[in-house]
Length: 472
Image 1: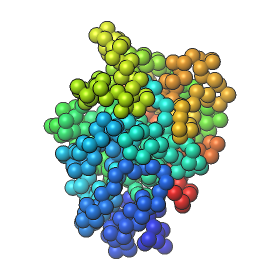
Image 2 (image 1 turned 180 degrees about the horizontal axis):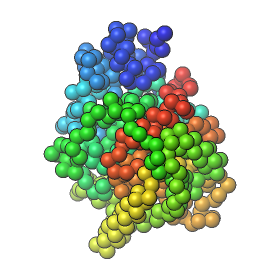
Image 3 (image 1 turned 135 degrees about the vertical axis):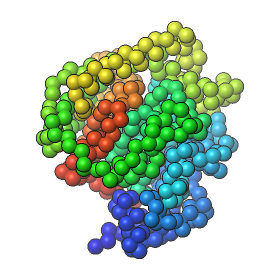
Image 4 (image 1 turned 45 degrees about the vertical axis):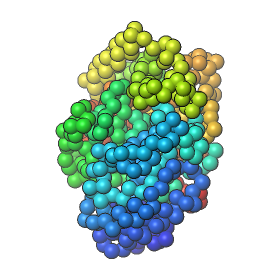
């Protein structure tokens, strides 16, 4: 029996949508129109730009292609020729993109219908040392969580995850360094998908890819988009067979360590119990060997946070500091602090920190093959901010100080981002009505092993493909 009505967005994954196109059960045009109607009806502030005219022209796609006819939205931090390229900032309110990013170009060639742009925090927000909310000034205001309550935000996902969870579509292009915990997400080895043209290399933490409803969707995406491009000199050689290779890797006997807090985060206790239980089940189901290993990653110094703003300072150029008032509060704070405090000495200290962190990660992966951890320390905080400083019953400011309070929200994703290791996040159910995720970090270049672990979770502990609400 079909799982769709022709006037509603597709409720399955993208691969099954392509199968429906090929079988003649549904057309790309019908799917696009249902998606455009869902965008129009949404109250989530997930989209900043919709190009219905171009999408309708592209909907006459060759459905034999991997993504033939599938509507796809692109995060507003990535370039799509002719579209606004604001990076969610008023500073670039009038800028239009002159080219497609390499990833977008490869998606077009695979038959994808590039339809809309999803909202983001200004410049991705992870460039700033303080993360207070997903408020932004350039487009629609505060982005909201489609599940449970409109008063919450997605701590990691942004408009693209709100959109896909809402049933808008199947894939969202993800140009953030962080991971998600309501959908399946893979952060690949650094350089797996090129970031060009005009690739920015420092601070060596940002990867591009997608978030999706299923593991096979993500595998197909990487089949299409991975591979070296000379406009990103740090991009990796092509690896084929991601989708075809699913379920083909022998994981038995590989080692796994469970470190929900990575030795540094303050994680909500009930969430911790739930994630440990899921991790233990996956270790058994995959026939992994659990090992005991102490993990104690260091706190990132303030200098490291400030060094992340180097690229932003270059992009702003001589607009700064005159454009200061056009920036959101957290970017204002970050730029002000970096201008006052960043120096040759602090840059050197940040580089030494990065080197030491890499050495620690390498040492760990000489003793294990996978690290199981939480994706986030807590559920999504209030949409309007400020960022929560209480986890469970722990007042982070009172018990650990202000620096710990503002760093705790991102401390679980820093290790894989900083070292370029691949990591996945697996939807792990709900806590307090909001989603939580299990993160698994792997060795460089071993994404396909992570995908096979995720396939076991997908079969044994299936997650909903869309948010339960049918409204907004």
